[in-house]
Length: 471
Image 1 (tube, rainbow, N blue to C red):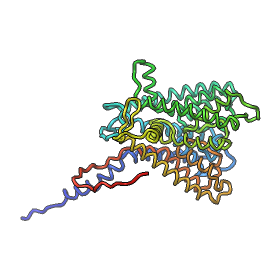
Image 2: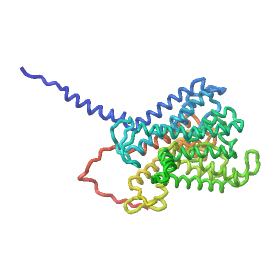
Image 3: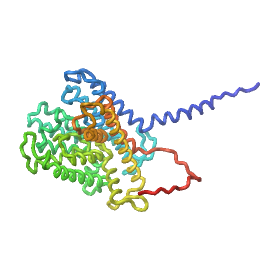
Image 4: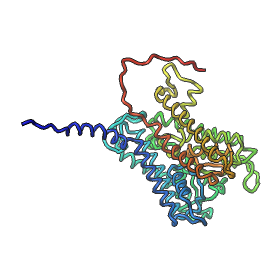
């Protein structure tokens, strides 16, 4: 009797090779990160669309609810409606979205920076990471607990100080207002319960110093904060190379920015207060220092941004696109990326394509990735600006105001939140463009730096080298 042969093993092999790429796609880092933020944004949009979340005279449109949700999750701060018009429930939802967005990107980026070979599902499978400041394996759950501890401790301290100050200033609901601004400042979100942000506290030294301290600590990054705490507790502890660069570059950006704004606005916006009273030197320095700190993705403002001089606005674009540190709540291309790009422009590379700084060498692979990352961000900015010019060309409320649209574009991609006040005036397509830009600035820029796990094929025969003239 002839034995029948069933093609079951063959089918199993075919199904395996078909389903394997599908499984790898859904388990990839980019899909997991995008899914987390998209689900959070959709949940926030639904909650903010509820009547219990809004107290305005007219109903909140779904597009405006989605815009607010994206802006909160992406810790941007751009607003198409006044945050003060949301009810307590609505403001709590915004606060939760800010916290989930800020902690989400910090957790994802920190796990990638610290744990060599970790896949996002937090299992034991391994991948190669481009950054590896700590050798050996680390427990991801323990790291998340430490991140939560540092975050809640710093946010809680800032919220308590602000609540005490707001109570002394006679602000209604000082405790909730302090908590709201404490979380918003640490997450570099820029959302405020006050309709004019912090303009009423422009010359209030305790409020300014507290908010600036929260913005800076949130923008340094978890790894830097943890390294500094270790240095404080153990004076013999040596700071990491990344920490040294971050502290040096951040100090230069803050102090240099303050000097620039002081000189550029001493006879302009910083000359008088809202009532027309002349300001003294100390008050002008306070305004300049806060402006320098908030420009790098924080989004709070103590002066009207559209009243700044043209040199200040151009310099603001630079600060907004730089942003904060890697593994932080801040956006932008990150301080270390900007540092490498600047160093390449000024000092160049050695014969091996490496940078040398502070008795260390930065390998050519990292320099190349930073350069490519910067070029992608600049290209995306150009596309978004063109899209906004097209969408708002027939908008009588905005028109072709290139200065305002340029400022809006940089603010959205850098997740800053500062604006010339045109955000509520944008058309429907313009709002959608800004929504996509905020999402790209928060999630897209981060996924750009994730390493690609392409198969490396050893080539025995390759194309001949081509020579291209440069310059």
